[in-house]
Length: 110
Image 1: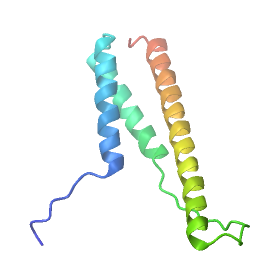
Image 2 (image 1 turned 180 degrees about the vertical axis):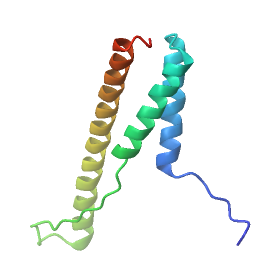
Image 3 (image 1 turned 60 degrees about the vertical axis):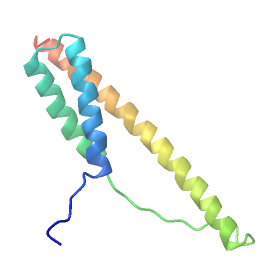
């Protein structure tokens, strides 16, 4: 068992992609290295806060459907909720990044 390789979680892989893109964007815009490090650190904390893991369950009031169809309906609802939650999280992350860049500008760091 000592030869088990630990792979990064999806959240960790997602953050690494976000960090890489953020660093590239800031470098392309000519942001100083210290500002880049500051923004990456702040956004990582924010990402970790937003990256919540929660579970929920629900019962559909449609008891006339066969179990397979009920499962399909639940799956559609859960997938739609997950997509909207992902979009909402991305929007909040982007808005937070804009606020942090504004703070850097106000502090004269950029």
